[in-house]
Image (cartoon, rainbow, N blue to C red; front, top):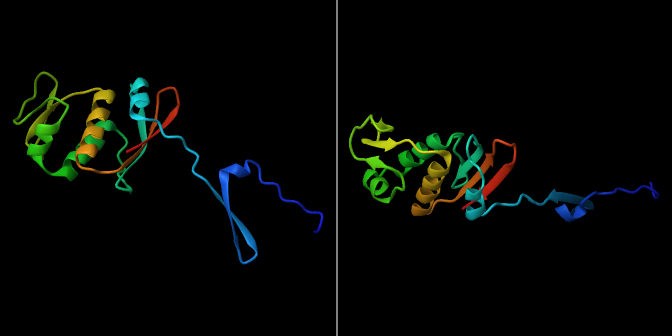
Length: 148
């Protein structure tokens, strides 16, 4: 065994620790995060959420609209949402002009594209001082990592 060697490719991607005579290699998270401006320069049409964690808890929400409604439900403050939203929300039941009524909030939200809905998600996360890790797959297959 004196002539045996172990080669670790890309060793710079690992931390190493010596424990009881054993070397333990742990991969360093090398995933680059995209900043907000770069995120919104991308074409988000037909993109999908692969993973979203809010305050380190997986939301299991994979569409922008469902993630936004999940946030609204957790915020649980109708007046704050109506006052702080970037979307068109009216505090009553409305079904025309692209509005959808949401009984649980007692307000109607006008439909919005992925970009506008994601901006609203980020807006609400910031207002509530939540943390968020978001992994998105674009239509062309590119995967983006965004962190607040």
